[in-house]
Image (cartoon, rainbow, N blue to C red; front, side, top):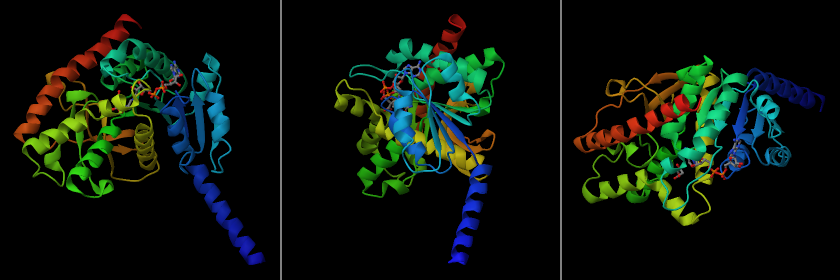
Length: 340
Ligand code: NAD
Ligand code: LMR
C-alpha cells in the first residue's frame, strides 16, 4: 500500500515537473464566438496547454467559467472586455489565436468582410504587439489573405515584427481536402495527405492533387474535387442560411494547428503544416505572403518548403491564385497605411 502510494506520488511529481517545464499559455481573442467556444473547448482538452486565456467583447468570462469546470490540468481565465482585460489576457502568451470578427452570410465573399474585420484585427494586433510581442499569432479572422498582412504592418509599425511568428490559419482547407478526396476515393480521410497552397479564399486555394496518393484523378472528377476544396466554405455558409460560416470544423482545424506549434515548440522535429506566412516563394512576382508546407519549430517558422513539382493544370491554378492574392495582400497593407 505504502509502495503503491509512493510510486504514485513519484509519478505525480514527474508529471508535474514535465508540465511545468512545458507550461504554455494560449490566448483566444474572440473566444465567445462560433469558432471561439469550441476552439477553447478543444484547447482545454489539450494537455500541452497550461493556461487558457479567453477574451471577447462579449461573454469571455462566461465561457471561461464554464470551461474551468472541466477536470483537465489547465487553468482557464476569462477577461473583461476592456483594454486592461485584453492586456492581461495576452501577457506571457506563447500562442494567440484570433477568431474575432464577423462571418459571411450567403452571397458574400470573404473580401466583403474586410471593412468590418480589418479594424478588429488591426486593433487586436496592436494590443498583441504591446503585450505579447514574442507570441505566435494565428490569424483565423477573414479575409485571411488580407488580415495576415494587416497584422504584419501593425507589428512593423510597433517595431516588433518577426515573420517567423505570424501565421494565417489555412488548416481547414487541408482538412477539407483530405475529407473530400476520401469521399471520392472511398479511403480513410485521416490517412489522406493533400498539400494545399496559396491563400484562403476561392481561387487562391490551390490543392496539389498531383502530390497526393491520387495523382491519377483527372478530367471532370478532378475539376469537381478541386472546385469543392476551393469553395468548401460556401457549402457551409449556404447550409447555415444566414447563421454564419464554418465554426466546428474550423475549431478542429485551429486546435490542430495550435497543437502542431506546441509539439514543435516542445522539441518535436519534422512537424509540417501548410500555412499562410511571409514567404520568399513568389516574392519576385510581388506576392509576399503565401501558404505552402512549413516546418514548425521552437522559433515558429523553421523552414518554408518549395511548392515542389506540379503539373500544367496546377500551374494554371497557381497563376490565377497569384493574381488575386497580390491584390488581397496589398489591400491589407494599404489599410494599415491609411488607418494606422
Ligand atoms: P462569430 O460572430 O460567431 O464570432 C466572432 C466573435 O468575435 C464574437 O463572439 C464577437 O463578439 C467577437 N469579436 C468581435 N469583435 C471583437 C473584438 N474587437 N475583440 C474581441 N472579440 C471580438 O464568428 P465566427 O463564426 O466565430 O467566425 C469568426 C471569423 O473567423 C470570421 O471572420 C470568419 O470568416 C472566420 N473564419 C475563418 C476560417 C479560416 O479557415 N481561417 C474558417 C471559418 C471562419
Ligand atoms: C471557411 O473556409 O469555411 C471560412 O473561411 C469561412 C467562410 O467564410 O467560408
